[in-house]
Image 1 (tube, helix red, strand yellow):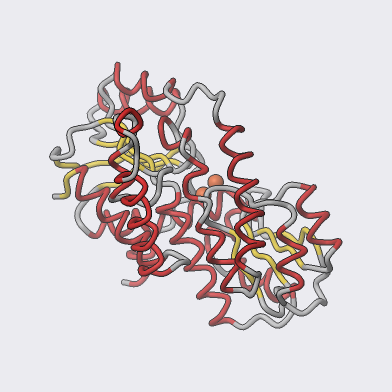
Image 2 (cartoon, protein in one colour):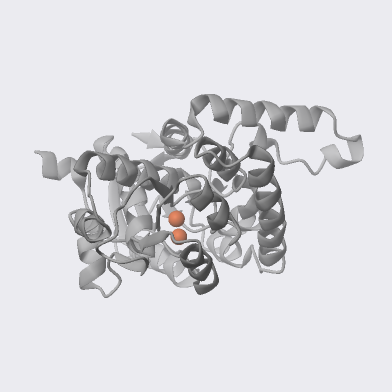
Length: 322
Ligand SMILES: [Fe+2]
Ligand SMILES: [Fe+2]
C-alpha cells in the first residue's frame, strides 16, 4: 500500500520524466533554487519554502496529512472546492472512507505560487528557435502578471475546511499537465495528421476528448482552417497557465505553425491569428482529466482505489489494455 509521501513522490517522478525541459533541465532548475537559497539573507531564509529545493513544481504539493499514512482510497477531481471536501467527509460517514483527496487545480500555497512553474516555457521556446533573451523577457513580464493575479485570492479557504473535517489533501497541477502534454504530443507525432481537420480527428480518437465533445467542449479550431497544414506544432498544455500574448509573433517567426492547447483567451487567439498561426484547442477539463488519469492509473496499479469527482472524466488505460 502506498503512503501519502509515496503517492506524492510517484507523481513528482512521473512529472520530471515527462517534463518538456528534460530531466537535465529540471536538475539545473533545482540547482538554481539551491543557489538562491544559499545566497539569501537570514531574514529572508526563514520565509523560504524548503519544498522548493526538492520539488520544482511550486503549484503541486501535499497540503494536509501525515506523510506516512497509508492510502487505500483517494477522491480525485479537477476542481476541489469546499463542496468536494464535504463530499469526502460524507463518503467517510457512508462507509467509504477517503484517505486522501487529490485536486488538480492549485489550491492553498500551490495557488499562491502558481507562477513559480511558468519559467519552464523559456526553455521550450528556446528549443523551438526563439532567441532566449526574447523568451526570457516575455515570460518575465507574464510571470509577474500571473503572480499579481493570484496574489489577492483567499488561498487557504479550502485548506481550512479540509483541516477542520480532517480530510487529507494534496494537489497535482504541473505534475499532471506535464503528463498530458507529453502524451498528446507523442500521439500526434505517431498519427501524423496532415491538416488541421485531421488533427481534430486525431485528438478525438483520445477517449477524454471524445467525451469532451459529448459534453459540449470537444477539440476545436480557434484559429486557422481545417484545410491548413499542421506544419511544426507546439504543445501549450503545461507550465502553469497561458503565456504572454506576445509570444505567438515570435513562435511564428521561429517556424511554429500550429499551437495545440487546453484553452486560450480571445486576446491571445487574435494575436496568434494575426501572425498566421493555427490554434487547436483540445479542451480544458478533458485535457486536465487525461493528465490526471495517467497518474491515477499508476495509483490503481499499486492497489489504490480511485473515486472521481469535480469534473474529472475518468478513463482507465490500465484496464483497457487487458
Ligand atoms: Fe491543467
Ligand atoms: Fe486546468
